[in-house]
Image (cartoon, rainbow, N blue to C red; front, side, top):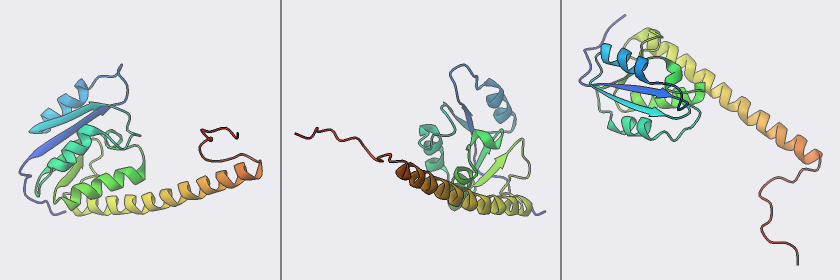
Length: 155
């Protein structure tokens, strides 16, 4: 395994889904991992429009590093996870998960694992499209009208 030089800046990303959960454990781990700055938010990982994550991704420059405590803090689906990691890599930055050492774009094994994840994300996207199309076809066959309800009544 060939390691690349240390990152110029290390950013942490911490996220919890509900108001009742706390960010403290993640913040402690990210500080211990040497993160210079930590972006944090309380929002569902299923939401694609997470303000702090988007701000962090826009901040990344070549040789920066984005660190999470666990992959599920970054994304809830393989497809979203791959899209986010691709954006990190496209910025010339690196990605690392503290709990999943295999998810590290800093070495060849990590890059291989993330490439496999990309393939799984592609399959997942196709399966979602297929299930959605089948569901629409079944609904139409039952006579369900799809789309918005008319705002105006026939008159």
